[in-house]
Image: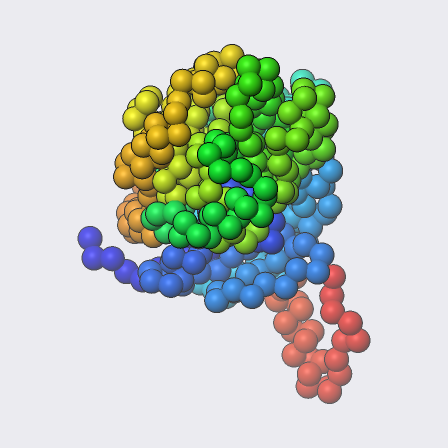
Length: 434
């Protein structure tokens, strides 16, 4: 099939300056498509004081501050002006990366422009819902609504086989396609003098093994396993430095736990690092990446580590451990501190570096390669949609969204008529509309 230049509408509930794996994925989809494949528009909730400086349009729509509950602001997708701006872009395909408000907006836009909606499942939302909602009945209802939203898409992608299995466990019964995410780091570590300077600035002595964790500072990321294992290491006189990069609601509690375990002086918490080149230096400085998380569906950070020649210690059977051969391009352990400490104890620095070199050669994938594969699939999805072939499961909520789309279109039309009349009369509004 001859590839056509596409206009792609990307949607996600988080986007820079918010930093997380899905925001990073959305940003890199936009970057690669805009630079070399087609045209992009991004729709995402508003954040106070944020001004976007992107080489493509970013449409921000109204949002509510729900950061204390779920860590993000919740967007309000029923916006006539937002829908009008996205319609004027004339997208060929809509790609949503979040099943809540972004997918709702995507379904509204699909009603308006009649193009396919692709959804990518990045995150184990049952875990997030479990942390945000205590009532079991409410939690079950929320998960059911989430699955219905996903099933309303024309094609569903997952970022790993494990992510697909998790989606199935929530009750999803449709088909899905594995589309692996890439990383935006170039292949290879930063120059040695750069990583050495960072090591010196952090006060890490030569010859001492440096372990690294990068991610959201939440206990469900497996950080307790790391701290308990390193506490055992100190009791046996094992020298190390542990660097935990990231921010989150439980960061201070983790720091206090490290102190209580007697390893506080050897654990560094530099916070979130938004400078990608500096973060790359952290990966390049370390000797081993510790990521004992069963929460993550893909673990982009594992491939970021591999890009810098850094091997990872992962939980056997986890999504992050897919494509990892134990002892070759990574180290696999059981989900407990004893197993982690046993693995660390048996590794020399030379062995750690050899595993990292194999990871660089075998599991690294760039965003350019990842997005090009997705872009090729866009062409197929569009062709199938035009032929009437879709995986979409029609829901009662489609009628409601169709009504909302009609109301938004009517509001936008009425505003245009009003504005034209005001211009003819030489009048203007004193303040912008909310």
